[in-house]
Image 1: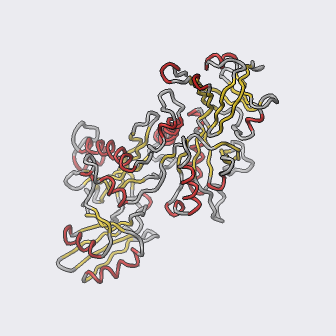
Image 2: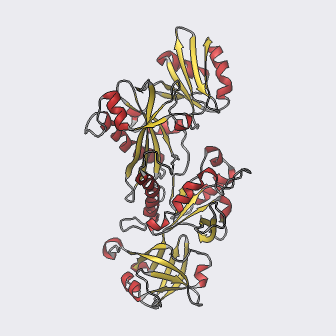
Image 3: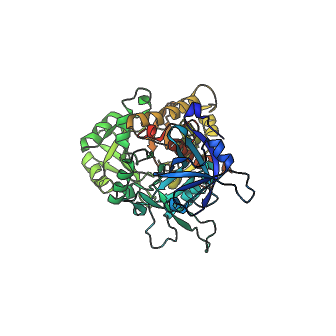
Length: 490
């Protein structure tokens, strides 16, 4: 429950937020046992910090008139005007004796946007269920988790209107309760799409939040395929996982790779969900076959007699988007269909990368894309590796170990190369017909579901908790945490 002050420089304990008490300005009320546990004398003058809000306060010891098995903290109304933590909330108290600083938190902000679609009844669109599940996990980390958007920030007062799930909604729909809160201890970026991320108001708010001192911000952006490749290719530990890739600056870049590899993929550098990905195969001197998926998930295939005819056929698909061209890896097949491996890698409460979930995505028949949204099917990696390669995924050597090494090295390499802080990443790995492991893509905003086809709800719970525990680490509310100022920027 407590981190020894001699080793960490602070004392730590779990408590309950009691709400408001008394009428005096800037008072913090603790029970005698809590005060003694933290090492705070009654009537002591301290600095009291919640999120980015810091006030001078006086500590007063009080005894609760009702039975309570947990420590409780109350604050005076003046302190509570800008910190409307719901009474009864689990909270963590941290006291620095040398600085006479008492912190109550962690306060974690989930940064996102509201849904503006006229036909939806949800406040935060299709991601609302996940946001609610994250916010409802606050009890498990003894902190407050709220959702907020750019328009909820009071830039001058450095306050936020944060939203938590209403546990007693009037209607059957999910309802959200607004609270006036300080800027949080940590921001977990939950912007849902690339197009939303590019909006000026989102960019402005993100830039402002990331410039705040002692405000760790993680998973800060969507990744560009070429930028990611360029960063990783200079790191010897992970460069062997990268397929031959180059940006498409002119048609000659496509022609060069076709002449060299005969089968290539064209991918939007900032695309997702398999949209606008094109497979081209060269037959003979000047004959080409191509295939791509439309937005309504229809497979279109065709042929071209000559490179100019090929470019004309693909121009409507590619449009003005930036593309990369990549060697066809000729992925191994399971039950006659190509497959890849999806890994959800997340940091834990110690800041170490862990494999939360791993499974195979088998492409639908006649498709070259394995995305589940495009008709792909999830399969057990143990079953697939045994069937295709006669390999044991858990063996200490072989393909299984190659996959584990890739999962271990790639997230850390991206963090090092980008200089940014990440708490979770989706890795798409491929295995070619010779059994070599390749990196297909890194997704900075991996999709997660709250429904388990396998019945493994522990994995779902773990996928929700790990980024929150990492946020608590960044906020400095574990005994082994660094000071938040030491975690800024990486």
